[in-house]
Image 1 (cartoon, protein in one colour):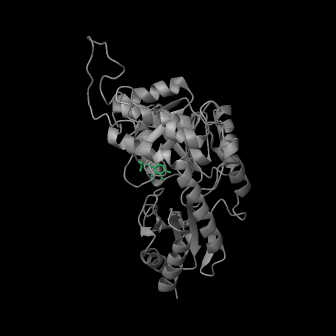
Image 2 (tube, rainbow, N blue to C red):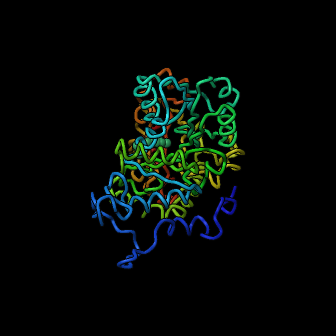
Image 3 (cartoon, rainbow, N blue to C red):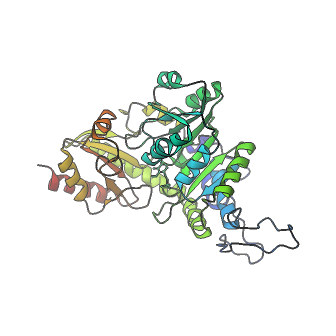
Length: 394
Ligand code: PLP
């Protein structure tokens, strides 16, 4: 897929244009070009029950509305809802379910998603299966009569596996289940799950859409008015809504999403190729490499391959820990998607909660290193990694 193939609405322009303008008209009263931060909890009513579209900021806030319209547009969807975090958005999808329902999820979904499913919702008698969603036969075999939701991420974390969204959505629909896709890693600039048949797109806006590691927020986008109405009901009832300042920051982030993603992808591709030839590295996980097992699917489903990559060092847990502690430009930290490059060791950081044996079975070895490739000059990133390898590895 290329950007020219994305489902752009010709009337409103291409995604680079819509990223800047969608949902954001200049303020009618003052002419302010940027959407104001409406720091107001409540709104004057012209008469009892007669308001101008806003009555209380948990229910609706104009800065949040602008963000929701912008995100819906970028995903090629009709309706957007913003939340206080990615997890609050995911929780809202789970609110759709009833006791006794079954959810089929990817085995390598984000750890927080796994925790919410297993440690919170199993207590409410929801059932969960975690399967290798790159294996459609395994997914089919795991469907139960009570399966109501198929939940996938693609590319996945940290092994960057690519799931076939169209096939998974078809499979879910054949069994009258919903298909939800966490599009945090790819962003709507690279991949549009609704167009591929998914019912719901979920985002941690904390990552690429915010883009500057300075906020926590989430979103859901759908084309289905009934689903959106229910999301709005839970958004207001549960109250995990983002404040207007965070909404403003995400709106500022989405304006530069296309240019940032182009550079994230360019830098990640160059680093992946360099690491692939490096004697200290035994494996590189990046969908843009032709050796990646789902490279062809990624090329079809995505406009480019993203800014996340992982690699396997020929190293012990301690040596790999030393590598991630020895970089200067890459910062040792969890999270991803900001302008700055981050490095981490899944075994001791993002995936440490998984018991060691299960972690190794899932391919999360002690020498695995994950990087969120930022926007710095790629030569500096290469030099930094080379010097960390020299310092930490014999
Ligand atoms: N989905 C993915 C793929 C993530 O990586 C994360 C967080 O790392 C989340 C969801 C949760 O988002 P948040 O931290 O904004 O709640």
